[in-house]
Length: 373
Ligand SMILES: [Zn+2]
Image (cartoon, rainbow, N blue to C red; front, side):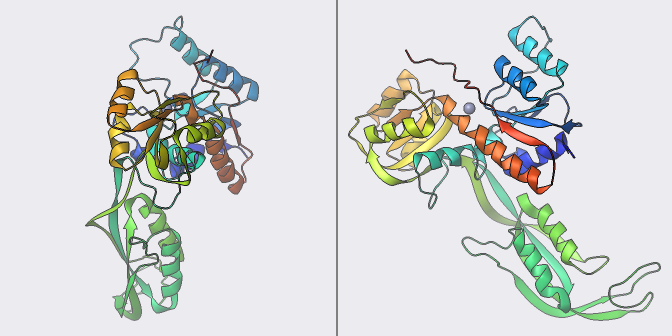
């Protein structure tokens, strides 16, 4: 069985929920339909004409890419322009395009974490450079008969609910008496139609982040024996985990700026990169931001990092960084290509789990527009 486009996008949004994206970012389905069986997914950084040719040759009818193909509302679709030609070719070949951009950058285990891993930034104590989204916290309260107390509690915990700071499996449980009268046509787990019941129950209270509340409630309902489950889900005025752009943290192996640059050439598979600052400067803590990092130099300084690894640094930003005593490694925007293999890997694991015949492949094409001469 082939997976539907909508199902594949659901897997994608488990990794990178849409609400993580920065305001006005162009993400989601941009062209075609998700309402079709997908033979193959091609994962690409950019959708160029060559990438579309690759999708056709691969028999892929869905492209998941990092960079958008439509940035502003189209006034017309002129197929004699390069962009118009690209859209025409995609439509004629029934290839849909779905974009996962800043939501994938922000995601826990997304582009910025993959880059931080490649740089050798320790995962322990890793922080974001700019907060984008904070998970709202909810309180789930459910009443369960004593016989099913542990099973329901464990089902709730398994979804990741009940975490407070570094403490897991947090909950509060009070014994009490539940009452109910099963109405006409009911099939009660305990009691009989029309007879008032008093049952020894436990009231379970658990903190649930908004991002997982659907998963938690559905797991709780599945483990609960009652036909009609009594539960409350209400917002609490507490801040949950935050998610953001960029990462900063200590290097597994400290190095000089020059040594780190050499290391990153190999890690990122780039022929050349630019450094700003003295090559012998010791680097213990590094910050990274995939894409254009010019706006994030001060965030990197604020994080206490000795270097910012990023792309698209311009002349004046480099001068400002030098004046502030901040070093930079400009490895190019294209290092975000790490997302191709990682996203394909994530989708294949999900597709395999659901026993689907659809597969995801990473684009083999380099979409680096610059050539070093
Ligand atoms: Zn980018």
